[in-house]
Every structure is written in C-alpha cells, then in structure tokens.
Image (cartoon, rainbow, N blue to C red; front, top):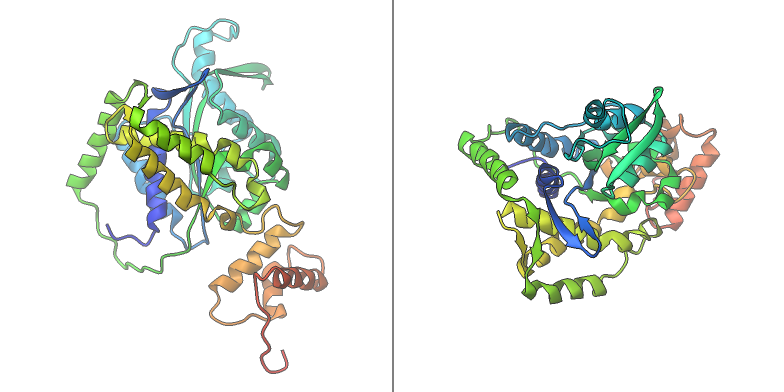
Length: 366
C-alpha cells in the first residue's frame, strides 16, 4: 500500500524475515557444503528516509507467525554469544565436549539503530559477526565470564538500518579488509518525498493472510532444495558474466556474490511454497540483487576512503538536504566537534570538489 518508506526497503525487509524464518530448515546443496538463506541486510539512507517504517511491520509479522528467536536490541559481543549458546550450554550442563542438542542455535538481529546493537568501533565484534555469516557447524568461544561457550550450528540473520555518518562511527575502516563488506548487503535509497499525515491501518484480512503464509512457509519448506534443469544455463551465465563493482571497498564482494544470489533464490522459491528453484526465480533474484548493487557504493558514502570519511559524509548529507548553497562557516557548525581547526574542513571541501562530489559557487563576495 501507500508508504513514506521506499519500496526497496519494504522488499528487502520481506526477504530478510523469510530468510530468518527458514533458518537452517531449508538449504541448497552446494559442492561439499550447503547454502542457507540467512542474510545480513542494512538499510542505508538519511535520518528521514523511513527505514524503521519498513523494518517494524516485518518484525511484527514475524512475531505473529510464531518466530521468537530475536536477539537483544543492545548487547555486548560477549552476551550476544552467551545468549546464542545458552540453550546448548544448559543442555550440555557445561560438559562442552558432549553434544546432546541437534537444534541449530538461531538468532535474528533486528536493529533499527544498528549502532545501539554493535557499539562504536568494536572491530572484534564486527569480525565475529563476519565469521558467523558463514553458517559454521559449531562455534567455540573460550572462557567467557569464567566458562567457555559452545554454539551448535550458529545461524545469524541481521536486518538493520543506519546513516552514513553513524555507520562510519560504528564500523572501523579496517573491517573492509576482513570481509565485512562482502557479507552485508547495503540497501540504499533517498527519501521518497511522500508525506502521509495519517497512515492507513493495515487490513486485518491482509495481515492474517501474510501471517498464514509465513506459517505455511515454515511448515512446508523443509529439507534440501533443488535447481531445475532449465535454470542451470541461466545460473551459469549470471555467474560468469557478473562484472565486479567499481569500488575497491567491495573488491571481495564478487567472490560471494553468487552465494548471495543463491540465498535470494531459496527465499523467493520458498515464498512461493516450492522447493525447486526455476529459471524465473534465478532471473528474479538476479534483478533484485543487481538493483541493490548499483547503489551499494553510494550507501557507504565516503566511509573507508579517507581519514575524515565520516566528516565528508556529514558534509554531503547536509548539502543534499539543503535547498540553497552553504558557506564554509555554515558547514563548520555541523562538523566543528569532529575537526581540530577550520583549515581541515577546507581541505576536505577541496577534496570533495576535486572528486566532483560538490560544487563551489560564488554569491556576492562569498
């Protein structure tokens, strides 16, 4: 229906909640391993882009469908692991060498404010999340609050939101090299400009249909997926003809792009209550992923490009939202806390000008 939130946010929220709902109960055999539908999604945009307007209905629908393995909204990396391993460790009665629980340890991180969840500049936590995306058979963390934590088949899904400025504060630039940017999908959009004074209450009939469909997906979509013979050639073309993103921050993304595509195919196929991936599913997933990829470099702004990338992102955001030019003094009001002197701002503005990100105009003597 009508929404102030961009359609792409709603689309990826839907994909995310279905992936989390499936967990490890549906998978695609892939060589000597399996691909599962868990995803790391981050909706990126300015503070008024209505990211939460898309995320919150998805979380509510998932709760109504009976899903209850949500992560805490704000948690340390130690407690995050402890919460995931809690059921396993209780079942093992702290005998960490004996496995008695066959259920994967699943958790869904829904963080409208991602920084509240991950903190600021916590590289070890970022690295740990990066590793958990890979659906390990087990994860052991020694001596956490005096005792080890054992996690059987950790399965983590993330649906989050952020602005460029806050992202730069939360994620250390070093994370680019450890695979973080190849596992997260950054879904960017500008604000729609749509203004709805009094949003319409969703139809109870529509809500009930969606909840029933989610329950049906969870009941019917279990076990190994298969790929239809007619789809194999399409997948081969998609895999071999993909051109890497023209941004060094995503230089490792191309190595995992096909995995992202197959995760999407599992989700789309199960959403239609099928267990066989068709040629149409492959094309649909590739179209959705390609549309997101075009804006992924813009989603990160200046993050990881320079020492003052967060300041540059702030300047670009201020100018994008302004209806008239801003003077150096105007910009200094927004970034004075992050820089030592105004000459640093002048250097950043000069760099953005040479990069053709902004333009200088003369008004009177200014």
